[in-house]
Amino acid sequence: MLSIQSPRHQVKLFAASSVWKTLLAAVAFTMSSLYLASPAQWRQGIGFRSSPLSPLATGKPGFTLLSSDQTGIDFTNHLSDAKAAENQIRLNGSGVALGDINGDGLCDIYLCGLEGSNVLYRNLGSWKFEDITASAGVACADQYSTGAVFADVDGDGDLDLLVNGIGVGTRFFLNDGKGKFTEAGDGGLTRRFGATTMALADIDGDGDLDLYVANYRTTTIRTTGFANLNLGGKRMIRPEDRDHLEYTPEGRVLEHGEPDILYRNDGGGHFTPLSWTDGTFLDEDGKPLIKPPFDWGLSVMFRDINGDGAPDLYVCNDFHSTDKIWINDGHGRFRAAPRLALRHTSTFSMAVDFGDFNRDGNDEIVAGFRGKGFALYIFTADDGTGRTWTRHLLDAGGIAAADCKIANFGGDGRAAIACSGASTGNVKLFSAR
Image (cartoon, rainbow, N blue to C red; front, side, top):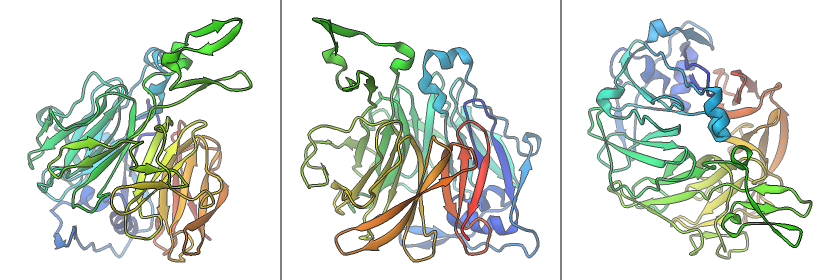
């Protein structure tokens, strides 16, 4: 398991014991390819490939902390007090991407940094890693990187790299199949905004991966301050600031985020941003949006929420911005989920995951937020017009749940929720009874 809990925390690598190796590889973390000394034996399927795992007969569920001397991973995501004071957005921290970049069957690691370059570690097997950032060409120096993902976006069979950053939007690096990358000069991606996380799925069924980028903000008035107009003794927001600032009836200043971006892939790794207001996105009543949502996007995930086989969207938004659920019609057009599907969503949301928590054959939703816990949405019913969930607020033991994952961590057939703290560095596991 890899975890970056705050801008100043070091990366810690944990080796899974026998049961965990099988479960995590099957669920989310591809742990097997992190530790295998020899390449996995892949079996090709239609649209996927798989590799059998043979768990050891001994051992118990759990993790063992490996030192940097053992692994060769020596990375700290550093952010000085001075740089944090310049822009509080930088305090959100950074992410990690995992994938086999050179086709050797082993899972490599890409770590995003804030005050310093990103680092790519090639997996040598047996939990040994080598820093190949310079030769791979993916340092992304001189930017505050927030998130990254490996994905085959040009359809040539190897994993390319997408990297987000504050004020630089999304960068796109093409892989030559051997772990060397070249930045795409005309990938069509927006090079501005405070991009945070990404999700990829084939939204229109044309066989390639489309891209959703959640945007937060590049700067904030909490750091920069702002100017207003005074007309006849009445304070007013300047016209150029009215997209992201407003006065509430109580006289408070409300700051909005930046619009997210949904890109359609042409199949060759060139992206086209889709409009929020041309009918691609509809509100709950089926009407085209009048303007883009100016939300504080932190996390996003594609998932078939309504069971029709098409990837839908769940977007976690920070502060007062409510979470958004967009239902895909199967052709890349999205409609806001019915108002009664989730009667309450969290504010200050930071993470989302899906899984069958109560083993009834339907997905539950877990969303972590900046309070002291997370929200678990239990599937309630599907009456033919849409699915509904009931919200349960759960205490995360005093940590603000910056990330949440549902998986069968204990090997007992029951789903559990793992939550990591936003600034404490703690990870806590919650099991179903």
